[in-house]
Image (cartoon, rainbow, N blue to C red; front, side, top):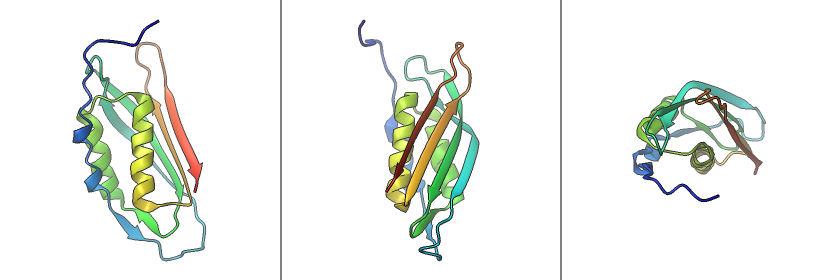
Length: 128
């Protein structure tokens, strides 16, 4: 076995992390579980440049900040032209959101649609 040696298109610089915004959670100490789902996440296969489609689920317990949803939408849309492996996308989204809102708990799930007979789910979660 060997590592794929073909041309890989990433374009991570197109991910617009600076679009992400937060607002202050006014009920510090009151734990709530926030869940949001985006059924239209898409990016590109870094080898073929074919589109990958996924459902993105975000769950978090806020500490002092909440994600502003319009900014989240703009951030997520920026993945559209990025060649990214499923395993990498979940880490990038997790790290960017964790840095933004500094939650007590965060879970990111990306469930990719069937392509080539495979359905892939990548998930990351952590209690801070």
